[in-house]
Picture 1 (cartoon, rainbow, N blue to C red):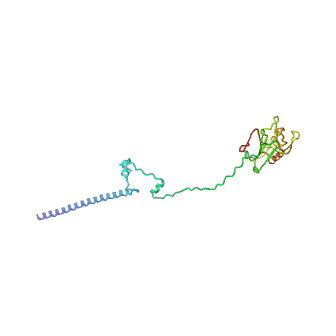
Picture 2: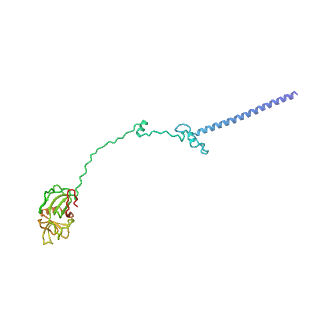
Picture 3: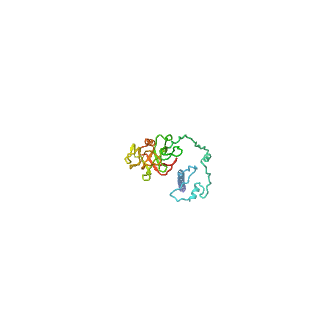
Length: 284
């Protein structure tokens, strides 16, 4: 009987030891599971911290939104979450600074560029050449010119230049202009109503120093400047009151010689009636 009881006690002790061992093993398994879960949570938190960007302006964290999830905020809520003022809040007006004021506000001294007036010596423009078809000067002749009289003075005119000859039928005067300056003038012998001197502008066609008229009984016509092919010309002739020509322009022979010496083929002769011209007036 005692052996049986002793054996029962030993069996009970073994059973208790076995149960205690089983309980300790279960506790160890639970603790290990808790530790693993805690470690996983720590790892997740570390991973989330690793992907949160930093705002370069403030140095703080920037709101991260997962694009795969619906946005939890409206525009205003997102702005507030990001640390921005509400949308309906009126921003304070900032002063408008001029460049100079902005430089003072920033503590910067702006460089000033000042223009300086520079006076340069500009050479005077070259004198404009005299217009050969405008009267630039007239010979200073006092009173009227009588038949047979003539005047010649080149002192106020250039040595060379364009020659223009004018004849006015009413004034019965011929004038020679070089570059617009009158160098000679004389009373002219002109045509009649039946043999008129034509009006117009005529180029000098030929020059014939010792010409004689084949049309009018070999009459001498020295220093001829032919104007038309039908016999109209300027030539030397006695110029007397009461006499006339057959349409030519007769001038004193000495005057004709001077005119012949400077005239060239192509120079213009302008014949008008009653046209009075003065300094500044156009010849043609």
